[in-house]
Amino acid sequence: MPVINYHNYKSTEALQKAFGDNWMYVGRANQFVDSPRKRGRVVNDPIEFYRQWLWSKIKAGDKAVLNALRQIDENTALVCWCAPAPCHGTVIELAAAWLRGSKPPLANCEIKAITLWQPWATLMALGLKRFETRSWATNYRGLLAIHAAARPVRWESEVGLAMASHLNQHGFYGRDDFPYKAIVGVGKLMGCYATSDDPMGRIVYGGEIAMPPSLPEFIFGNYAPGRFAWHVPDVVGFKEPIYCSGAQGLWTPDDEVRTQVMELYQRAREAVG
Image 1 (tube, rainbow, N blue to C red):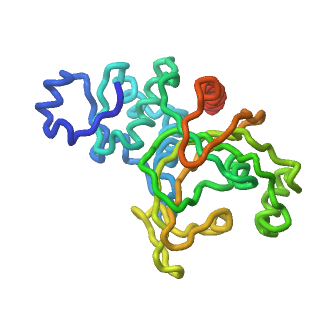
Image 2: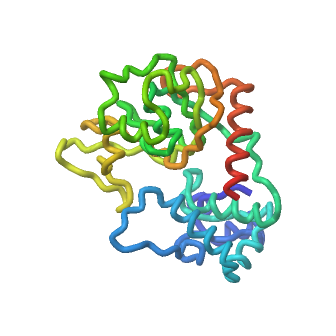
């Protein structure tokens, strides 16, 4: 059962009528969301922070958490305030499915792709670049394949010393070290944030996402006023790129490429546990 939004039902009576006793509230009053926040720490990705917290509870054998998760079956409605936007409810859904020994279906997952020049595509695949900056915003949230354009790296004119030092640590020293015209990884687009209209200003969203970001993230994008930062914090890089043509804007891979991307993503997710 997908995570559902309380706003669509407006009362516990309506939820009871729709789902009987087989629903669970996972909003702020629920034990699931009592994950600790370290004071003074900026949490750039609250969903990933929550996933790590919940997994730590599962590994520690926390009885309260495990008992609550085991109450969730394939038909249980998880009720929050965020759906269909990504939230911690999806993390709970996946954790419960894992405990049941079933794999969450990926075959029907929507996936979009975006084409970047190198070396920025590889920076995302390496997990060094978590924001892709664009002149336009998007309402899309979900799986996003990172595609490297066919144009070679202009190393001398485009790659500064600071960026080069990070790439050198991962074995990239020149234009011929990068894959081109290929999908190099996939992650989840979690949010889209406006940059500050004041070049010297700083915007903090929800106490967690700061624009512009700190170094070294800042040097990997263009955070000039009037732009947008797409947050993709969990990109899984592919050891073997998937070669295919790209397109401008958000685009949809064809069925063959999409299947390859989803298979590699599934393997990576299973490896994490």
